[in-house]
Length: 95
Image (cartoon, rainbow, N blue to C red; front, side, top):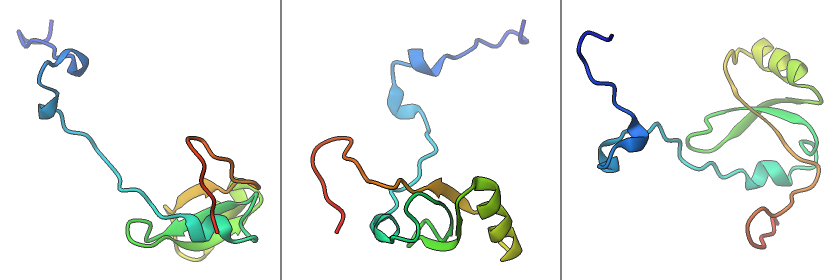
């Protein structure tokens, strides 16, 4: 057993307001998605909590991580920018 302690399943917790979640604020990526150089490429970013700034971009994940590390960014936020932005929920347009 576990020393007499009762296991708690957070999914069965009736008072879900007591649960703590690690959350990240939404990032405004419009400028990055609109940049033609990044379309279809991987981008490495810093300062993503306030205004994302691209520090490197490349065709492959390995290449973008290598470029970011060469610039002194060991743990950047990395994502792949699609060639074409398609709506997921409702209509929207990046201008």
